[in-house]
Length: 521
Ligand code: ME8
Image (cartoon, rainbow, N blue to C red; front, side):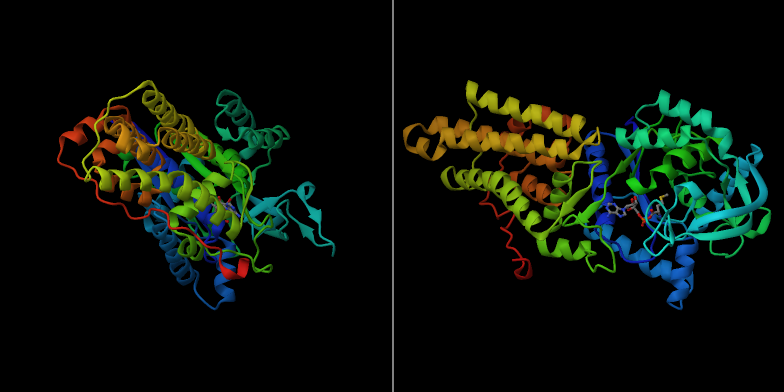
């Protein structure tokens, strides 16, 4: 039985169209999901949209729409983006779905049954943009004297009757969790931030609102809707069958299960303080890891509508290609840190690394076989040099898969892959099969066979990042889908392939050379 692996992105606020930050998170998570499938895991990958809350209600009002109409329209753009970027989600959840209301009310009742919810009056600061409550001590002032949240968003004074969650009672259990499960919060820098925050003491959390009604109704309190983060976080277990499908829950959301949330650095507190406390209160298993990735910035600047530099990920994908964009984002940004993108940087990386280092290598090798051997697969007769290259490739596939993608270090995976591609280039130059054609055809075949195996393995290993180009190449090379798993990379698929009557056709270019768009020059 394959072991289950549950992986999620944050669910996005559909109060506007998706931007490159949303694309980045979806792509990174998709790479981990695809890699886990290649490693034989039973993967459940969920993404979706977070549709309740004041921000959605206010945006809809501003546009003269009902919140659900806004959510319907914008959520479809997020799904469209995911589909266009080859995001292999198993479920796209929308928090307005009835099943999600059921799950949110069930977790609420479980927290209430545990004695953790009480009615009181809330007085304090709220940021609609962050959908977050802040302490006075966390605020700063803008140049005009306006109070700002730590994220730099405006806050408003709020006074309301509210349900409260006894977060203060969870301080010790949370600190024990961070101590006992050092992988729970990643990377380390975020873990330290949260440790300091929780060590400073926790106040009970206001978890319902009465001033608007766009949300999940609080069971037994029809005037209250849940604080949007209570319902938003619950999306993860809705997708795992909570509360009506206990068998599915036991599979994908089990005690000690492999459950990973990939989110951005601005929402780590919600996922590593509130979420585990809610789950503990409801007596439900905890995720294994919450990874807070960095932000993607446009030429080093934060994107904002007022600066007019919010990039449409679909536009970038159309210009540069889906795989080039996916590859660029993961290769460029060290996962966990912030990173920057620009048209020049995308073009440069795609041309030098995908195009020259890998695409041309495959192109040269396959054309040579098609032309000089009539497409017949060459005969291997490995020398030490051939074995040495294949050992580099095997080591690289390990660094790429179990050590890179599974360890949530995609940039390291790509570096390892690229080093192996460069080693193949050095090998082809040193062996010069074009010269061997006349002098030693048997040796030429052995060199081409070695390259064939190396290229096939490297294509399979990088497939999670560039799925459509890798699949195209593997199809062209005759490597069957069963032979593309991580386990099959160490088997002798080449011998099996040679026994078939497969003929190598002249290849089409995999990564057409990108030119810089005129306005960026
Ligand atoms: O926070 N670069 O939704 P959201 C990288 N609904 N990642 C970025 C980014 C950027 N420039 N900007 C945003 C929410 N993100 C909540 C989540 S989860 C139960 C509820 C990331 O649409 C951000 O950090 O504001 C978050 O992980 C995701 O995009 C959705 O952000």
